[in-house]
Each structure stands twice: as C-alpha cells, then as structure tokens.
Amino acid sequence: MAKDSFRRYIWMLDTIQSHGRLTLAQLKKLWMNSSVNDEGKTLAPRTFANYKENIEQIFGIEIACDRATNEYYIVNEDDLDNNSIRDWMLNSLSLRNLLNESSGLHERIILEDVPSSHRFLTNVLDAMRDNRKLTISYKGYSMSEHRDMTIHPYSLRLFKRRWYLIGYSEYSQGVRIFMLDRAEAVSALDDTFKMPESFDSESYFEDFYGVRRSEDAKQKVVIKVSSRIRDLIRTVPLHKSQVEIETCKEYSLFEYYLRPNFDFKQEIISYLDSVEVMEPLSLRKEIGRTVLDVYLKYREDVKR
Image 1 (cartoon, rainbow, N blue to C red):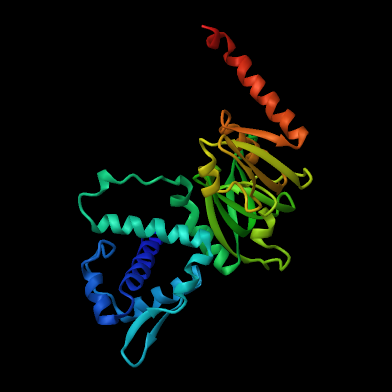
Image 2 (cartoon, rainbow, N blue to C red):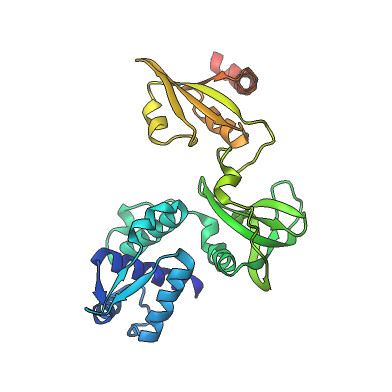
C-alpha cells in the first residue's frame, strides 16, 4: 500500500510539473487514464488534498492553487535540483511511471535496480519525516546472526546502488551506518526522538568519498590520470574538492583534499591501469602493495 501511494505521489508531481498548471477537473481526467489508478476510481477532492499534503511533507514540494483560475501548480519548482537524493528519487520513479504509461518500451529500456529501496525505503522515509524511532533486524557482514536494534534515523545516502541509513544506535550508543540491503526487517515505532541540531548530513561525509568514514587525517591527494579516462574524471568528480592542476597530451593531474578512506582507495584501484597515486607517499605505497598482491595471484597465468 505504501509503495502504491508513493507511485501516486510521483505521478501527481510529474503530471503537474509537465503541464505547468492544471485544474482539478483536468487532473481528474488524466488520473482516470493513468496506470497508477489501479482501481479505476475517480480522484476525490479529499484524496487529492491528502496526496498534496503528503507530497509537501515527504519531498518538501508545495502544490498551490491559483484562485483566479483554479489551477494547481508547483510553487518551488526551481528548488527541485537542490536536493540530489530527492531529485534521484523523483527522476527514477517518474521514469518508471512513464514506462508504465508507454506500452512496448519495457524491453527496450534497462533500469538499474536498487534492491533495498523496494522493501524498506518508504518505512524509513516515513519515520524520518515524523522523527520516529525505527526497529531494525540487521546483520552486518561481520555479524554471525541478525540483531534487533532501535535506531534514530538521521539521514539516507545512496552510493553505488545501495541505500545507507545513518542514525543513532541505542545498542551501540553512537551514530552508525547501516546498509538497508543487510536488514531483514525495518519498522517504525511510535516513540519519537529529537533530531540533534549539531548533525548535518552533508558535513558528516564532506571529508570522505563514499560512505565509509576513516580516522585518517584530512590530507592532499594527487593522482595521475591517463588521457584515456580523464574526461570521465572531469565529468564525474571523485570528490567535491577535485581540482585539475596540470594537463598535457598524455595525462592530467588531479588534486583532492580529503580523508583517503576504504571507498576512495577501492575507486582508485578500480581504474588500475589508468590512474597512479602521486601523493602522499603512504597512500602510493598502500596502493602499490595491493597491486603487487594482485599481480602475484595472476603471475603464473600472465607468463603463459
């Protein structure tokens, strides 16, 4: 039921945004022919009002009525691009709705699935909206069995097809990061919590690439990127501190100021034949040892 409601919210947002302005009568007509109207019922004024209120609470998007024309429109449409997670959700779900409306396209368009979002995302978002605690049955990769924990959900982060929940764990007595696809069950409680004024989602991750935090000191990192992939690095920066400090025909040098955590190191290694760490020496040695270990595993086959 929650998943269906989410689809309807997205349909309403997408429909009003694409038309610019619509009267309730026009919206009702479009609703009757929509794939999200599974039961074929008319859009009642009370239902519309509930959807409009929930859209504002969940997405922070206000739908208002121009009393002179009785047309509904999105008030803060220019602000939609300011929230990358919200924008991703709107774009992804809007595309799914569009595909449902367009017969014959399903086999020609491939969407990247995010498994954990289907099962738990709505429950987490509802709890975050009302500052309600969550109970989560969770099994991390290093845990032998699932453990039931109570979490104060602070934030959500999407990284490499995985949703991560950042929140205060009453079990651990501290802020922790949970992969939603490692959860067996997630449900909202009636108990509420007070969101700490000192917690800021952007600041929590600003010194890191990805989601795994590190106690390493923030430092300058310089990588040498071959001409073959430097346009990719330019287009999709590894970190917001990225600066291209030197370029020539064969390569470019990119500088970062961050904490080189596990996710950053793995990303560098993924470009193994096209990226070389120049600074700091400690990171260069660490990546070099990893490359050597990889070579030793394959050297017999390489010689053949």
